[in-house]
Length: 236
Ligand code: ADP
Ligand code: MG
Image (cartoon, rainbow, N blue to C red; front, side, top):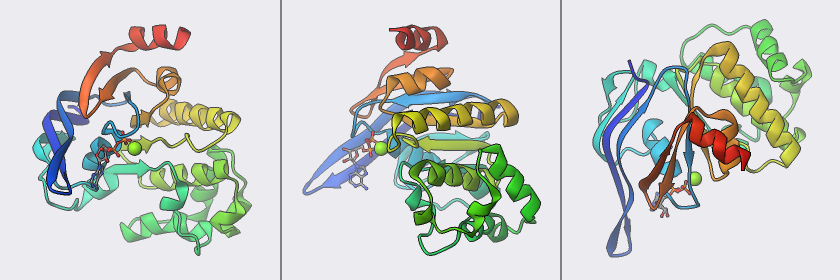
């Protein structure tokens, strides 16, 4: 079973009177437990690809399977698919309501999905990412950028997703905090085996964490990188 199996995928957008192809890719498979990287400059189509896989970009053509189930374009995700794919954005404010205490933001995904919620396991998952239990009482603005991003990761993991999508999730953080979050992701992957797709414009980040990666340029796959190629790049 593949986690992601893209036979072909096309996404286009209207720009004024013209139409631009934002993404045109073929043959992408992501296997269980893998960390799969997407590298490319700004505007190359990385977020568009993740947004299709998260069900946020619904206007697309092609053939895409998640967990061996074909995805239907123009249709919102329903049922377990909504739990199975979770995304962490560059800006954690995108997933944390500014006026809700962290407790509420972390409790909601499970409640909405009708899953039991207990405070003890929540505190345990905060500890797992190096946060003290008292952050639950705080509002997002009372946390540092790195802490907010840890919370966003805990929030995504609350539903035990089968696929975690990370869209430039560390790029807004300073170097030390970036490294901490990357180590955290590596540990999570080791402990939980969660399949991840990691988007970054930084080759080193991807080389450090991923087993394989695609270099995307102007919406197309420019290069496919295996572990050996990634190690060589990281060592440069
Ligand atoms: P990246 O994440 O690699 O920076 P994106 O996937 O965000 O790139 O964007 C790829 C291309 O698609 C860009 O040219 C961008 O302007 C365009 N694009 C993305 N989303 C939209 C949208 N909702 N409407 C119009 N154009 C879009
Ligand atoms: Mg992007």
